[in-house]
Image (cartoon, rainbow, N blue to C red; front, side):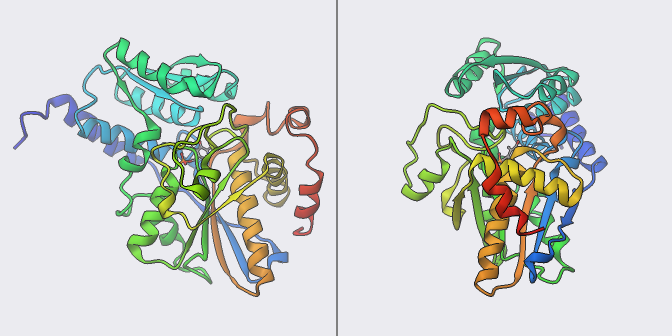
Length: 351
Ligand SMILES: *Cc1c(COP(=O)(O)O)cnc(C)c1O
């Protein structure tokens, strides 16, 4: 029997999301071959293989399910999001799947590939010039059309089912089961909304794993300082140069209580690591993957120096084809980040 609050559209939409889930496969866990790190294995959870190209595919599906089951989105509801791009790409895909109008509010200068992708999925793009205006603009747009502001930064940590089997944490542990060190000594992840770190940290506690959660933060972000001081009111005026991660304010979905350690990663180190990963695997990744992997490599070197062995898992968040004009353009890199030489030198010790 159906409750009276449940209309036909709601039931149809939930089925439509469930069938999309059935059609999509789990993402790969790639083991890197780094002989210099004897005794320590590093794995990359490759989230670039989702249908919308990033880990935000998981988040968008969860946000839609959460908003629909919470009665906030119904037939014809106009949707608005504030996004650095990846979330908007994934949300545009799900909005199109459900026949809902979608507008993304983004920073001017967001990667062109992402804008094209949003428009390809039928979404509209709206731009602001500084990161602190994003939220107010998105909220105002939603209000003006009596629509729904998806608000990933608030809902990311609530919308994901961190206990169950259908989340990134459970998937990592399932895929590690037959490895030499099946329970990773650490999982390393960066924070944008903070939602993925929250899911990882909660799942680790819930299942009682002896895994440390290490969160890495780029330059121009308040997460690192807020983790140290536990001050949630910190703000800065600058925007992160690593798309998808680092925020000018402490987002509601960032939960420092489930994080064991944080590292600050120089932006130039993130990009040097991307190039190193391409030499190692032939794969080009997005900027945040460089941040994650630099953190994982620093931790591996420290473990090795301390005589420890074990595994470390980190995340390949999206592919490099979105960033050919920036991180994969040597002119952009030298103009915005200067020389990568000292980080290249450190990384070359691992070759
Ligand atoms: C969102 C995002 C992240 C961070 O994930 P959160 O769960 O939002 O903290 C990292 N990399 C990329 C490319 C992203 O889009």
